[in-house]
Length: 242
Image (cartoon, rainbow, N blue to C red; front, side, top):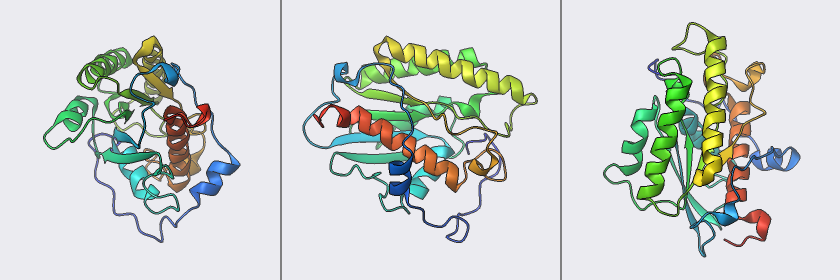
């Protein structure tokens, strides 16, 4: 789970989370996307044909995929003409599990774009500096193993409850510092940075009752951010040159 080693969630039912119209939400209020490097300069992104996109992370990715499948745009986020999206959400995943998930048996062909949403489960167990250093080291390894891949770092999101921490304020500071350090490292040509500025802990409606996982409303924003970031990476704003 995104909250570390806590218990598993109960199944989400239709009555708990009715189908929502993400297409309308995207049109009404698109979020900003910060790019650390110009995607035009990243090799392997603008290629003919559909792009392979892999979205990997902890339970935020798991539950986002679950919700996306129940929306009008589906698990492909409305990008099926341009890309093929694979979701690898692992509940409870920590940073040490990323490389096995990516390179383990049956991992398939390398993606053109890799979205990583991970690290929050490690806060409280690792210092923010250690986490950001490990993240950037592993991203460099990924690029060496998958030449031409574009890495999109999906920023760690604030939580109302940090299960592994006694001091929530300290964990929030560590989260922000780690995000900034990773963003800076990406700016050296490693990849792009995707923030989630509209998801903030002071908005309880964006979280489930546990204060850790995103609610339906929170997932709408999370999915919106992912879609717009992927559109940018695919070159939609440069005349769809993919």
